[in-house]
Length: 492
Ligand SMILES: [Zn+2]
Image (cartoon, rainbow, N blue to C red; front, side, top):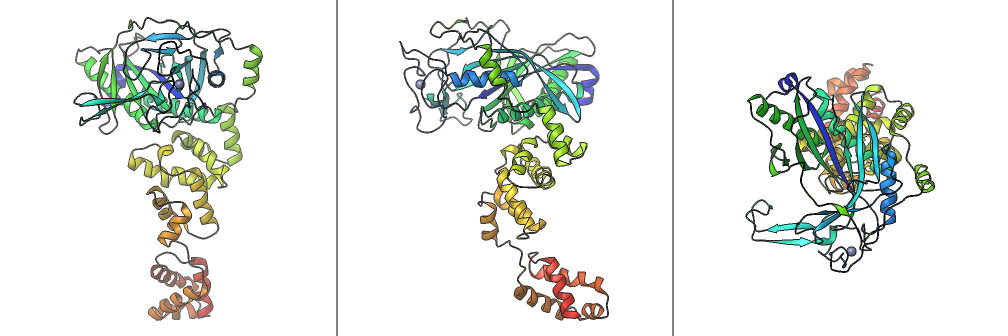
């Protein structure tokens, strides 16, 4: 169903659950390294393998990170809370329960103000709680990598027990046509906050930050929430936006033809841009939660919470206003930077030495174009803020011009190395050496005697044609200013 028809008949209600994998040195309840990857199952011990008799101990750094995330999201911090066992069987969860928090989350009742096209939406945070990640199954032999059709499965428990914070919003109402953008902006600005806090690498493409998107529609103006679906593990900002848009259109098509929405989880397919049915899910799903008997309650002192409040990064709204003034960006430039999810990247690029307008120009120009073409978020492009700052430095010191800089970007994105390596390997440096330039200028004069005569007669404007000829001969790699000087010297 066309998007505007969806909006004419229905109001969307959004909900977002974001899992953040913390960057603590050790796991949530044991001393194993909190590093995913490496030799499978090398980073495990009796506790994270769930062996009988093994006793968990809470990671203090993870509690600290949870509290700092909660404070940054304007949450209340529980004076006393417990962990709970969420019981279910899954092969990648060796204990057959996940140690999580249930009715006593450590952080609750917060909000985050999200900017979309210069408009502010307040997203209310219901809770942020601590839990542990599961291991990872590898299904071998099938065509899809899923369990269906696989010959056998392998399980790697290195990830089992890595600390997670799950951040859950209240239903986001009233976003209307902007619902897809609000969802994207929320996840993007939440990521920037997490990065500023330094508590996670927060790479969506690496699974450090994973978003589940809940969506329901209610008949326009009725205020009655419809049945919701939950699209799991959407792994980029763009996909969050696309998944919301797709589900709004899918729900509306079903509802308007008299059908009803099945309450279920759904899988997002990046390649085709659609969701497909996962498993049916009822609100009454019974995980037999009960308080974790092997862990003492967490009771952060008020003094500690206040101390952590003092370590928070600047409030994002205040920070944006300050940066806009410092950088001299117009409202439009600032809005576009935020909208592109480029604020953090621009900040880092400036910190690496680039001028603000140059940092903005590359991320919102050349690189935004590339991210659109490739269908990936800016942060997931294989180029760093340091690379961008270096390329701008090469422009500033006239090693390359703007046009050649675009080829340097192309080379870095293609994995050809650092900007300097690309310039060397592709031979992109601008030539300003008088010997090489002088020869090319002589050739251009010889090939265009009539133009040369005009310049001799004082028609300096004609020099452009000769500069063009020199640039052509030197494949765009001549210092145009120096070429002009040489032409005028030779013809004066
Ligand atoms: Zn362990």
